[in-house]
Structure formats: C-alpha cells, structure tokens
Length: 621
Image (tube, rainbow, N blue to C red; front, side, top):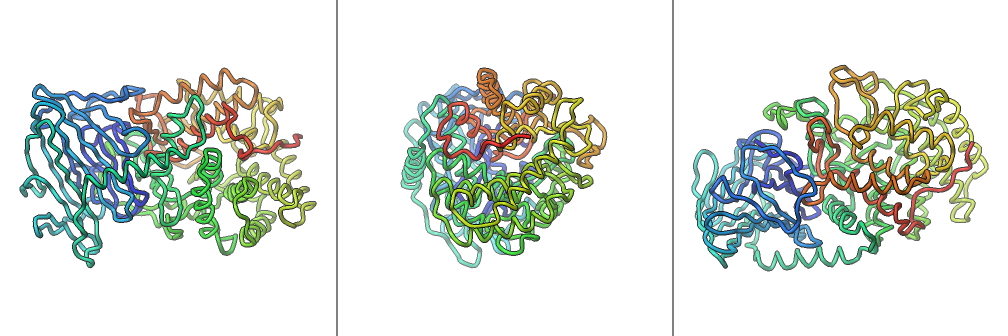
C-alpha cells in the first residue's frame, strides 16, 4: 500500500524523478524521462506494480531528522515511518532511523550526469542494525514483467527497449518475482546500491563510483543554490521551492513539467485524476518571474527557448501543454491493471485536455515574452514575430467561449479569467511598442485592450454580489479572479477588486484555504462536468495572500502566507491541493504551480526584485 502523498520526497536528475516514501520505499520512477513508463508504479497500485525499499527490518523503529516536520503527516500506511531531510540546500535526501540496536541512515539521490541512475547509500551511524532490501522491477507502469538475470555480478532487468542494471554490495536472492536481501550495517559501514538505466540495445552501462557521484551531486546543488539572490525572511521556503522547480526541469530542452506524477487524486477515491508530467503554457510567466526575480537568468532563458519552439507554427494550433521535448500528441489512456491511488480510478496516462481551447494561454505566452524582454533577456526577431501572430489570432477570437484555465470538461463559456488574459496580451503588446522595443499597430491594440476591459467590467462583475464571477452571467465564484490586481487589469485599491477579495474570503475559504470554485458535494458539477469534490487548491490560497498584499492588507497577507507554509510536508514540498476534510495533501506532487505561487507571494510580501514582476498598472474603468 502506498504512503500518504505528504510522505513522499522527490529526488531527480533534471531528466526524470523518483518519489521516496518516508518508510524507505521508492514507489514511483519513470525512465528514462519524466513522461516515460514507470518501472516502479506502486504509488498507483500495489507492490506488485514495482517498488524498491531499503529500511530497517524491525517494524517498530523511530526516525530522527535535522528538521522537524512542519505538519504531522498523520495516519499509518501499515509500513514503518521515519523522518528525514535534504542535506542542506541540495536534492540529496537523508533518512535516519534509530533502533534498539543502533542507528542507520540512507542517502538517496540521482546524479545530474545525463545517464539516469538512482544511488542509495546505507551508512551505519552507531551500533548494528539489520536492514532489508527488496526490489521488484516492472516496466510500462507495472504491467510488464521483465526478463531478469545476473550479468557479471550485476542484476539486469530488461524488456523491449528498456533495461535496468542494479549494483548491490550484498547478495540479492530472487523470490516471489522480486529480489531481496537481509544484511547488517555497523557503525562506519557504507554500502552503496546503484540502479542504472540504459536502452536495452546499447548493452551494459558503466559501473558507477557512488562516493564520487555523491560528492559531485552535492556540489552541483550547493553551487546552484548559491546563485539565489533572495535573502529575505522566507529564504528557506523560497530556495526549497526553487530547487524543486529545478528538479522538475527537463535539462535537455529547458521545459518545466507541472508535477512529477500522474493520476494522484484531487479527491481521494474519486475520478479527478490527471497526468501532470507535461509542460503547460500557463506556467510560462510564473516560471520566468520566479527565476528572473531570484537570479536564475540562464534557466529563464532556457525556458523561453522551449516556449518559442513549442508554440511555433500556426497560432490556431497552439496547445495548452506540450511534452518536455515539445511533442504535441499526448493521447489520454487508462491502464486497466492499475487500481489507482487508494482506489482512485481511473488512472489516466496522457491528458485529453491537450485538445481544449483555452484562450488565456495566448495572454500567458505574450506576457512571458514581454517579461523576458523587459528583464533584459536577449531579444529576437522570431520572438516578436511569434507574438504578432498570436495577437492576430487573439484579435479575431478573444470573444469566443473556451474551456478556461481549470480545463473544465463541461461546456465552453465566457470565462472572466480568459478575457482578462486576452486584455493582458494586448496590454503587453502596447507597452512593447510604446517603449520602442518593437513596432506594431499599438493604437489598434490599445482600443482592443480597452474594449475587453469594458466588457469584463460590465459582464463579468456582479454588482449585487460585489465580485467578479467565474464567467459571464455566472452565479459561481472563481479564485482565478484574485489575479486581477496582480496582472494589472485593475489596481489593488479599486473598490471592485477589494470587494471581490472580501467575497472570496467569505465564500471560497475553508480552514484558511481557498477552493478553486464552488462544487456541490456528491453532485456532478455544472461547471466542469465531473462528479465528486476536491481539496483546496494551494496556488489559489497563495493568490489570496498576494491579493491581500496588493489591496493594502499586508499583515493579513503575511499571516496567511505563513499559515500556508505549515502545509508543506517535512521536506518542504507541496502537492496540488490540501483537503481539509481529511487533513491531507492531495493531487499530483510536487506541484510546480504551488511552488511558483509560494515564491511569487514571498517575493511580493518583501517587495524583492519588483522590477522583474509581471504586473503593470491598469488604467481602471
């Protein structure tokens, strides 16, 4: 049985990532890249679908950590639990257990070498501790049983195009379609286990040097973290979020995925289970802002290059998401052999929302490219030509209904946030021309910008409720309108903005957390066409803290922000949502959108590097 979502920490090499449970089990690993098939898929099924556990044999051991968990993860998954921490400002995970006979630590990491591998070093601290190691290889999300053999002292698991090589310092015995060993670790012992991936047709990968890999991996992350320019009171949370975003970056292309997992449920036992191992255009500006405001210019430039390549072509064909390499076909399918996390079915691989029309992404792309220009990233004729084509398309279609930023699978509507983002696109284009960066029909774009703003204020604002609503004529609220002052559509002191923030505080907040929109428990939603409920969307909660700051309520903003920090797990990670009903993190993890929003809110509260913020001051209506 998988652990709770908050029980998992991430390790990664900027090509793929593994999720390590607090009990020492790796329950999720896709090879050779983020969106490839999983060779360990116990997270979405059972141990029969593949896992790798190294932990003390005794089920009653206790854990110690350099950092106490910010929030008790609660519950008992039926497996021994532990506390752990990352080693300083790195992605090297250390778990330490205390037993009656001694203490032991396991160090987990993935070297950023370009050759996917997982290294697990078991170190004896004092006394003598009996340990178990069990590994069950399965390819294709736990479906394919590989051919396993011994090859020159190594264990080889191969099937079709994939092969995994395991180097173990102790003999592993095949039993019950898995490989196992029980061994004793004494003070001073260092036993390295290394799992290496190679395409099956290329043969044996080189034998690793675990000690050297640990040193180079530690140095890589320390050097990367040292480039962070933010030194404020929230540095620990901001830097851990930045490291997490770096871990979600596909280094060969610069693309940043939304999360390392697929089909972790927004509603435990429900059907709101999606694949987030892709790159969303909606993340473009948030990613650039987070990177530029904290000193990571090279990463921001790589992301912009990915963005330009991904959306090149006919603007009518722009998608809301792409693969890490820019592939467009992300067909959704359901692996029938996986029961889903805690029975949350169906499991979905791929994402059918790729075919939706979401007009807000045009504004996101133009906003991102505008931000990169004003921040001083190198300009190019291609970049402006791309924006002109997107603007030409948006000029004809901004008035169309769409599926909105929440990718609803219900009917298309005139979502307020989509219209606001169309305003953003023309607003940024006008600014680009008026500041002499490029040439274009700024007068026409200014008229369109003003027309959109008038329409949104007339049709999207409910004067009786005192709030901008989810779509024209809606009775439902939507947390996305909290972005109105951040985007510069209206200033923070506009009475309509202040009133909207207050209404959302009153009607969409539960236990200090913000829901995306209103859902009736147990009924099919008229908005998204799905049954069931969901947790509170963590990014929306950060948006509220940010909106409070922008509407002149800094003390309340800081208080809410610090409350939100308490929902991170023991190693500083956030998933997509938190469910107050069950007191648990839910949704895919770790979630880039949550960490983007954390970084942005922290920087805004302290006004750090405000010259690289995305917002401009709207003229108001």
